[in-house]
Figure 1: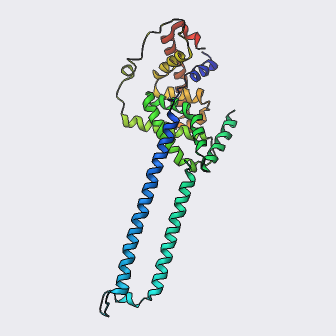
Figure 2: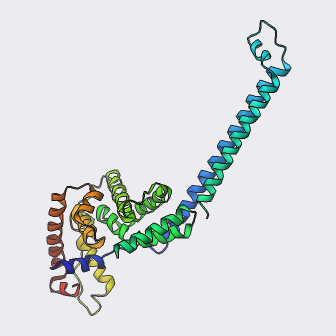
Figure 3: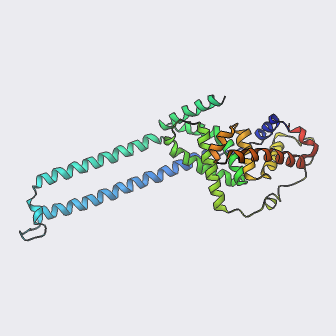
Length: 112
Length: 191
């Protein structure tokens, strides 16, 4: 057989996918993205709860508890409270901002 | 033609990276059949090959932003298809011999008037290709179906140049033999 005939034969033998192949692929991508989205919000939720507990704890130690001079946490009472509050708020805002940006980028990439 | 296809692929990829899902649908449509044929050469099972191909396209969707536009998209895609298919083959650890595999589909051709319909032609060609060694069938398809050069096949498969040439030569001989076995004189209908 000649080269051209081989080419012709092999091209004729191209195997076709099933009719719903593309739809199945697109649905699978959609599903995997939904799972990713859910896990993202789950992570955000966990992160927010953890930060709230941490901040509540710190606030309690700083403002409510009676810290004596011999106490282990005494050094905390020497830090200016307003400064701690401002720094923590700034960090929280930055964190939330970066999470929102990340989420927006993901949604932009997957317009289904 | 090849360059035109490449430009078309690049345009689609840019659109996909910009968030256009229909462009991905189009990209899958363009490459699905050739990719499935390649996966079938390795796995010798259309259903399994289609499952593998679905995973490949999902992988491609998420990795498309890493495509660097330096090579043809098809080359990049075929490499993923071949690697994934070989990995699947390893997983399957196929111990079934080819004779067993094809026991049910080997049959004597019934040479009636409708014998050489397009569907039948395809069936016999694929039967003949399935009887070749995996590497031979793969190299033949890459060379004739994808119209790749030996150098490109070398890049995609990581086979040595000499092996590719031998596989091409043996593949041609064996395909010719298989088709003659299956079709006898009716092989001329295929040409």
